[in-house]
Length: 110
Image (cartoon, rainbow, N blue to C red):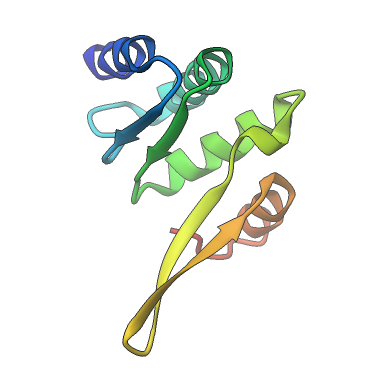
């Protein structure tokens, strides 16, 4: 609960800016992830805050996907996967519909 409260308080204090959250799901039970994403996405949209959050959790990615599918504006969220291409690191992006397909097909996006 403290973790979610800390993120929500940070969202409220950022104003219309950017919030960076490392390992957003740390310390949270997987059953709370969907509610966490719903709250964060709604608050970020209202506060005009852009959030960059990292995770290694498949459950966290699935919860994010579910919330994007249920929202009226699925384009408010996007997942980026970083992959090495030789000496370079490139970002591969997934919009809500692409993320949905990837999760349903069990394609690794983390």
